[in-house]
Image (cartoon, rainbow, N blue to C red):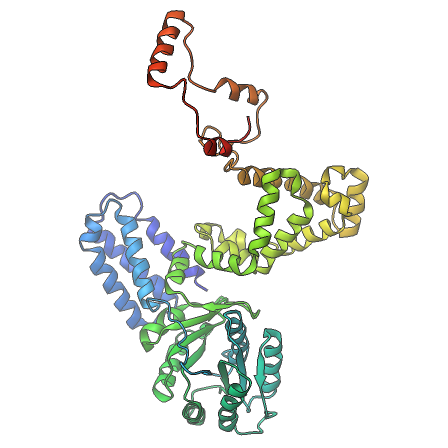
Length: 503
């Protein structure tokens, strides 16, 4: 959603690089470019004016003029101001002192409230809570059935006493759900309310009646991030008519302009609390303004990447694998490789994961064109091998490659290429696990090296200790000086000797 904005800002900052000092004209030109980029991204005009004013005031001040690198200081200012308009600090859910905590979802029809109720329920379950989803959308056809299906997929309970499709009283359902939650020991109640195709008095009155009946601890306004500035107008109408405590952005993975996300917190004075960025139930998380600003500026989002990895990867499995790699490369098999690959796939789309890494904005086109099915093809090749071939891929000869290729539906060259890449990856991972550092960087201490050259071991032996002179008198003098310094008797402590790789 923010790709176009990111590209425009990156081009703007590129023009500042290499300048030792920034003149007022440079800062004016930069501010003008940023203004155009924000307006093209459909950011509300009052927000753009406020943002540009703050950036210019700070850029013309002493923090840039005295900086060692003025262009980086301008990027820092823009980053901090982006964080500010996105809400500042991350806003967490407020939980009631006496359960259940009641969370009410409100918004227009089509904003994705029902699906988001399932995503929020799954997220709460992963946080250790026992949520209950309540079907109070009794107008939209099959809304109750949809919530029941979503709740089952999310692994959470649902309260749906009425069939819906125009039958039942949503206010009574909401009231009864609180008693049901206490009886069944659910500590969070998520109330899914009805939406309309536009802001109307009937919808506002029904939402206000449900609010008065259950007295929610949090009212979350669900807004479709793809509807642009209309989202801000709708949010203001809801804030004045019903009131809400936080915003949830849905469909953040769309290709529309992201102005709503950059405007809504500033205009309404309510922070964005959650963001949904995909169709799957796991494509949902708390909204972090600092991380979103970092993504917009092409700096990646390493913290979110780490959190996803921690949720997906098992600590015991990671330790087991590290132990195998430390013993030697032959301990790491294609079964282990397949298992690691499947765990990475559980984290989500490979292109999304790569997009979270710093500096990947310059490779966006290649990342977007990644063939996600390549992972499935690799898995098919490995699964077409016998257990013996997975344990020791060296036994895979021409006839075995042909059989594996037929079984997995790929060319023989694909099987050969996979095995070769596996050997290289295994060698590199084993070297890193044994403390050799990154390969391919000879001459750097602790960084290992690329492929070892012929006679490399001899060269290493020869390099031990200081070089000795060929002149006997100079050599004797050097030995005497070394003895005085105590170098000849010096020996590394055992703890350090154990850390060294075997010679």
